[in-house]
Image (tube, rainbow, N blue to C red; front, top):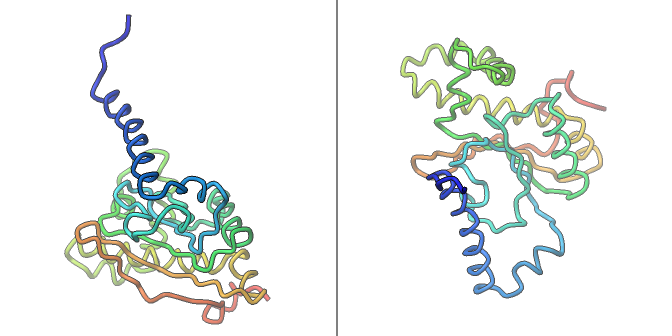
Amino acid sequence: MCAKTSETDLSYQSLLAGNKTFIEKSLSEDPQYFDKLAKGQKPPVLWIGCADSRVPANQITNTPPGEVFVHRNIANMVIHSDMNMLSVLDYAVNVLEVKHVIVTGHYGCGGVAAAMTNQQFGLIDNWLRHIKDVYRLHAAELDAIEDEAQRANRFVEFNVMENVYNLCKTSIVQNAWAKGRQLGVHGWVYSIETGVITDLKLSTYDNAKMAEVFRFK
């Protein structure tokens, strides 16, 4: 006997139904839609964002499929031992030859909020430790902010800043610059409450402003 369909099953089936709607809508607007996508991709942007389901890269930038290559993880981290992130970065920079890499955080980030506490959460504590290191670097300013929500939002901004810097430290990005590539690295923060993206004005196209110890010759 078949088990009774649950609300979860209905939600699952709605995804498949939604796919059919997506296909019909896309083909009605452009009969060649999928033929064009199937020819390959050449996105100009690599997006390193948070895995939060409320921050979909294409939707909040109003860009169609094929324009943004996306990597997402908890709290948009760039960690030098993360082979997943490094593989995506290497493919994006050296194969797809993207023009821009954007680290995008968002206010109200659960990962950042969790990293502000002393609570244990399980396996994710190993990941949150990297975010806690960002807090340590900016503790003086963060500890001076009495309002917890404002402190968390500022922490989100610092987290983007440090991960933009981590991105610039990679041999992948620095080698692209050494070859004369006009590769831009940027930092943004998205507001779920307003839909507005704030450019943190971190854009850089070379390693000239990096500490000497991090520069590759």
